[in-house]
Every structure is written in structure tokens, then in C-alpha cells.
Length: 96
Image (cartoon, rainbow, N blue to C red; front, side):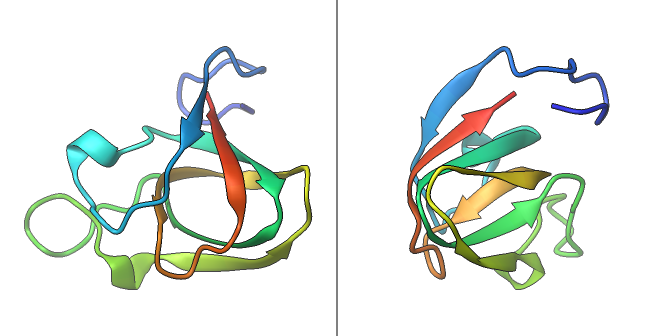
């Protein structure tokens, strides 16, 4: 989405997202846009946040909550993680 890093102007990959409190390389969405099917709050860690923990991974304290996202919306940000605690929206899809 957009012109973030080497991403194309339009999404070419989509996958269902399961929110998780685990922050690891395996859970990294690698800079995806989010589609919110069923609205609510979405707690995310934005792409590019590396954290100060020495591991190169961000921490939950660096997350932000987008509140009251309506059904069928796109979040206009690029994210790496969707955290379960604080996320009430469902039917999330990552788009890259």
C-alpha cells in the first residue's frame, strides 16, 4: 500500500490476522495495511518500531490503540503487530 519502503501502489497479498500478544519475528506482519471487517478497537505496533529491549523487537508499551474503527474500514497506517489485549475488532485482514 502507498509508497512505504518497496511496497507497490496496490496490495498484492492478503491474509487473515489473528491478534496476539506475542511479539516475535514469526508474528511480524512485515509492514502491512489492515482491513477491519467487524469494527471496534485495534491495538497495533507500527512498522519501523524496533524497541529498546536490545532484541531489536518492539514491546507492547510501544503500541497504539485506534478506537472505534467502523465495520469495513482500512487503517491508514502500516503495521507490524496486532495485539490481542486492547483489540476488540474482528475479521482483520493484512494487505501487502
